[in-house]
Length: 238
Ligand code: UDP
Image (tube, rainbow, N blue to C red; front, top):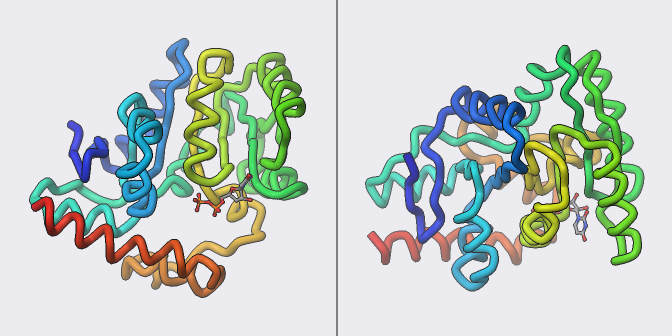
């Protein structure tokens, strides 16, 4: 079932159900799109029609952020719980590690994706990350990256180029990427690499992950002004 929040169709899934869907996608010959919107992305989609359309074409849209859960309560269209992109990908790695399924990581600053690969292959023994590339490339390099993905045919492509670049990049190249899942995962590559720290459990349980992120990256304050704006919009659209 889909739940509409300011025009964005969220899947009302638990983390286990979301994982089940991803696993099913890996067995179907189609490039499935996973998007993990937080309130910032929902706000951005209000003014960016292309992004909104991509959200409507996605195969799985998970509520990544306590703000989305709060909004759904205000709108009385309750999503069951928050499903974070980072945790979902970790669960996916844990299940596929002993299967032949392969992963490609695209995004983050030079060197970060390599570090993420090393860390993840250490954490999930037998996980097969067959290729990585940083997220700062020009058009010529882009063609080389696409050719590499076409040759490697990974089952899962993780793309962390920031929103909306990652969603638009996947959408533009979707038809020529021979993968089963393309996932827009924002800053998750940095967390996998350890260059950005995950919020401690206490913050996560209290729904204060955004606050922890702000402490780590104070320059995000300008973007976070979107959050109260988001809640105001939701209240207006009640
Ligand atoms: N990033 C990238 N290429 C770009 C811009 C950003 O690879 O042209 C990476 C950045 O290094 C970070 C990730 O995208 O790893 C998420 O960036 P940010 O936190 O700005 O985006 P968000 O997903 O929070 O909007």
